[in-house]
Image (cartoon, rainbow, N blue to C red):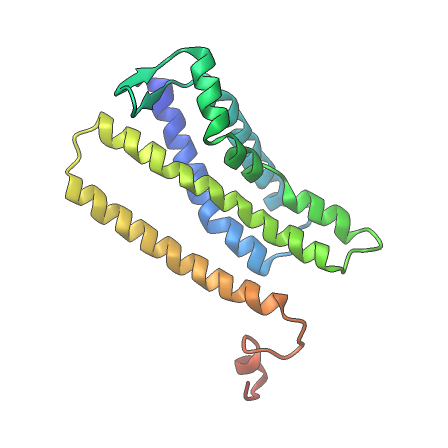
Length: 190
């Protein structure tokens, strides 16, 4: 594994961490608008698009043959059959589409909510973490139990965060002015 590949994997892990924590919060609590977060999201999308391009040139390990495949045509075919659709879908700027719909005459229709929920497709990028951790485990001599405990801890925290943001998203999808979320703040019983 080259030095560039290690640095790139570290960058992708940072981007995945950002995506896994910020995207659910954005969908649950923020409305898309032209601000610093919009620019940061476009930079993250650009870097993931660069990752898509690099994936067309990155050798992969074939479980069938038990060897690394470096043939360009095989790499391209393998990537198109496996991760290309997931990577492409997760790089779509759904918040940009949402902002365009928001400013049109049909802005308050259910399509706006659908587009906001589609932004959660960016979480599909987190599936990439498994590939990166596998490469990391293969290239270092880290104790297996320590790695598994770290994975469990990270996944538990991520799961709790996703659940909390998911509950807020469910509340927003309801067309009620008074709900279980604002009941405590209003002093009324839900």
